[in-house]
Length: 354
Ligand code: GGG
Picture 1 (tube, rainbow, N blue to C red):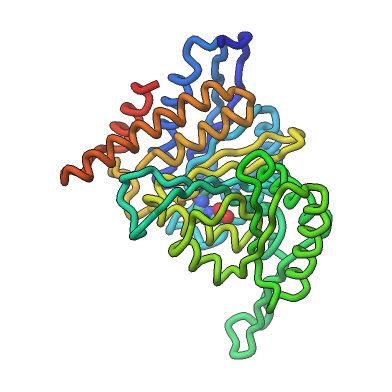
Picture 2 (tube, rainbow, N blue to C red):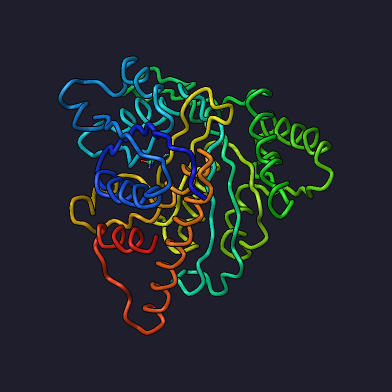
């Protein structure tokens, strides 16, 4: 069904490394998906990342933030470069965006495409989402260092978990579970992290009382990383904190066919600020500039973006085109002739299938 004409204001942050290569493929597919729907895309490219930092010393200014807030959504490539001290861009740009735009839900779906090479012996029917808390935990920057460079150096990183912050992300996760297979797994480490872990458990129990049709179980993070390999189809919705979610979703990407397939939505569910969509992977400087990066994760992030903006029909067509490309990969792999394509060739194939 054709929707009413609308201009979608999209902020684009290619960022660093392969981010600059995968984002154009995402935009190519976005344009193809919206062609003929009455919606046009007006993109504004933001010069953020290593090059800007080298030139100006800036990571993300208040002016950048104000301009980003004028958009309907943000498409981000990747952040991080070996020429910049570790943490400067990750904290000053990527995490600052998530914090300032209150992206408290980091939604990371994982699905196995039958036939696609995987390290799993029996992949089964893997289809789950990780709801990762995005604004708190160990990533919120609560720490410091004293006596640096001395034998008595002290470094602290303190995980922050607020009842408000945990409850809102847990509630979102229950809503997800309710609309899916009605099963929620809390992943934490409450036998050791007794303060935060017990609070997460209490909140899951309290919110869960409002969702009697959703079954709830619990996994310690170490067990969850094992189940991710041995029994991943046990999961439907996983809710967890910022660090555990970061690690678990990289693993989920690896077991379902590669991190180049995993998309991520940093959501501000209230709509007060634009949500941001990105591949789970980073800037991969080792392969940057060679056309080797798989743009599928960014293209699937575009599907998440379209869903978030209420363009479900266009999102479904993007997902179907990704499915078709995965099927072609599986067929080629089974015939012993894996598809070898450049970043833009993958983008072309998916856009052409729309
Ligand atoms: N695609 C975004 C990106 O560059 N991710 C790399 C990274 O450092 N991610 C950490 C995180 O997601 O918290």
